[in-house]
Image 1 (tube, helix red, strand yellow):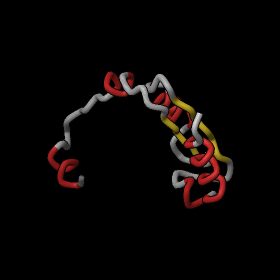
Image 2 (image 1 turned 120 degrees about the vertical axis):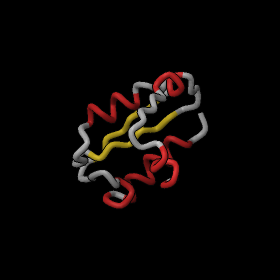
Image 3 (image 1 turned 90 degrees about the vertical axis):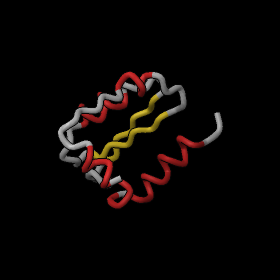
Image 4 (image 1 turned 45 degrees about the vertical axis):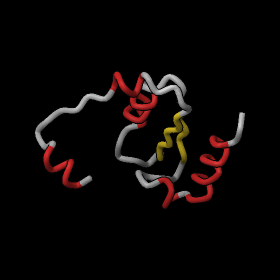
Length: 82
């Protein structure tokens, strides 16, 4: 991965059209204290036709580290069979 990033420096890769073709359920988890605005995470989530976005309070960019129990519960709920 680091080598791929190195060789692609300066190039713009636009995967939005590919993301719109993903039909599998997609979960986007956003920490409310993240420096990245929720609007950015929401814009990313909206690229997937079958998405669910969850914001978790008292969590930054690494939600799994800041709120491990809530992160696990959110993922567990998302993975439940329909």
